[in-house]
Structure formats: C-alpha cells, structure tokens
Image (tube, rainbow, N blue to C red; front, side, top):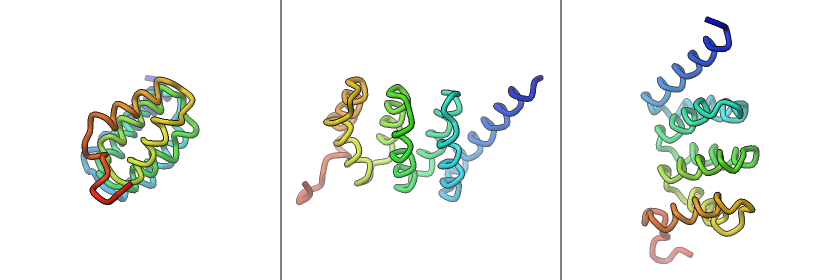
Length: 127
C-alpha cells in the first residue's frame, strides 16, 4: 500500500472517530483540517460531518469561514451542513447566500434550505 493511501485512510479513521465522539474540543482541529483539505471531496465531506456531529454554533462559524476558499460545489455541501446547525450565524449566512452569491446553484441551495426548514425562520420579534 502506498503512503498516500495510508495517509488518506488514517485521516478518514480520525474523522470517523471525531464524528462518533461529537466532541466540541475537536472543532479547532477540524477548522485547521478544513482550511487545508481542498482536493479530496470524501475527506471534505467527512470533515463537514464531524463538524455537524458536534452540534455546536462554533462549528457553524468554522464552516461559514471556509466558504470563501471553496468551489461552488463545495459551498453547496457546506450549506447543507449548516442546515443541520441552525443558529443565528447559519441563518444570516444562508440569507446572504440566497440573495447575493454569484453562483446560481449556490443561491438555489441556500433558498431551498431557508424555504424548507422552519427552524431557520426568525422567531417572533426578530427581523
């Protein structure tokens, strides 16, 4: 087995374990990993899954921060990860994406999440 395959398998194992633990302490590691992992879509998705598993608002902030450096297809995956992390930051980000992102597919994904998930609707008194 070559070292690249071994390295990928090790990363996958770590990400799987972090997802199972749902530990907020993993967020800084996942932040660093998301910043560096841009070529392997499988590892990218696993990283998003581990962030979602924490269920923390901080995880949503990490995802949002890294959309700037990702392709539209990856941003769409990030939008659907944020769907699982409803919080004010996610809501505001999705509003921005739904109305101002230059890629139509990204705008549509954000609009879909906002329209189909009442948990993103503002509570009475919010605007």
